[in-house]
Length: 399
Image (cartoon, rainbow, N blue to C red; front, side):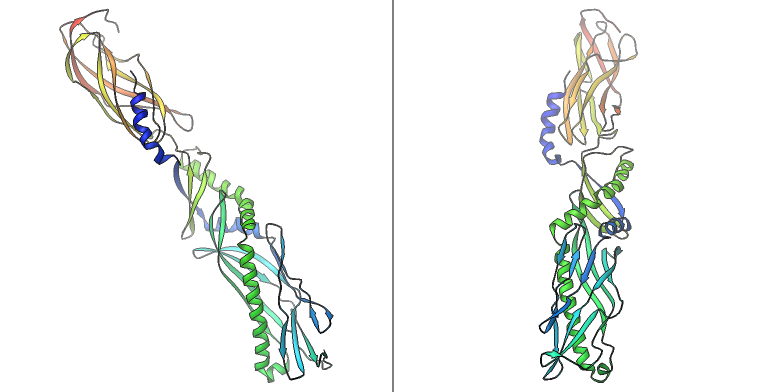
């Protein structure tokens, strides 16, 4: 009484299609993802500074850097800005200690926004004057005030190393620059030109630098590693809730999709075997009415369907012809499948009854298997009816 060979041979054909396991999609609030990224980026520092001691006819000293969550300090350059005022006179401008003030990650539209704001304390851009190669003696306000300086980066969460990484979208630096002196009120075009040149240089260098730094593979992996415990701690109870307290392991984040205020996070995990993973598609008597030489076998055609590779036990319960009670045939058998699909086999139960008498009986198929959570599940088919008459009977009729 063995269904193993036929079931295994049939389901092997479907196993390869489902070797990667099952997929489940869960919802995570955007604010949660933003908050954990915010914590990871919280120690980000940016310093913009190319102003130092005078050497020759220049005060250029490159001190600018950006420090991100992977701990590296990455230096970058800001060019010295030179503007010719007259044939003999020129102004030079340098950024002096413009520092990041706050860093945040917030949910914005279909993605997240990484925002760096800068201090606005005094004159962050120093202006120097040279006349015929020497410092000008005329005392005049040439420094520039920087207000509302901010750099925003649109980032899109993506799966990375079973956590959340990010792709870099638009990067934008903005600020208000102003030279507060009377000359600029009288000769507005010159000051507009100076302010515009400096703004253009800051915008170009900061946007390029921050984009390149955020796109570094090492940084992205470090951020994903930093937030992995919190991301997994948020997804784990959702998985357990989906599967009645059971968490299928190991699992992996394979997709993150925007859905309004939520991210739809798709997880690949082993197939979860539960009470609904096995179905009896068919159980019938091969020959409903038959004369046999007893003891003999009653043959049945059984078809089962499984959602995954599952193994278990099976048996036939039938109405005993002598006792009139439902009994379990002693010939239990083992069954197994190699993947999702259906399989059909012929199984049987023993039959013996008095000679020459038609007996009507009923039978059903019973299956048992163990679920992923360790619980044993049992499934029984509807009863099927058959008739048998023994042309001769050898042996003792027992029940």
